[in-house]
Figure (cartoon, rainbow, N blue to C red):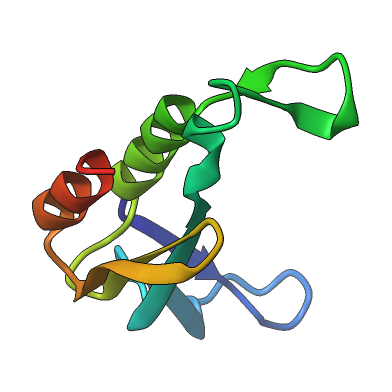
Length: 111
């Protein structure tokens, strides 16, 4: 959203035109390479992993994918490039850096 603020710095009681005017324009994210690391063993350990070491909610690979999809919706592209690195016993790059959110989602859902 566009916001404009005006500030006046003058002697007490004097009415003058504002000396300082500030206008805040809509901004964009500075360029950023964002690497997401995902433990894909979540889907292989009896279907779920306990959060916080105990009786908390369970996280499955599908839950993690859903959470990452929500995150990706709010990333400003093309300024932010996303990459996905997965790991279990070894690591691999599931998605190279991309500013294409659809490409990232497709690679994420292939897991």
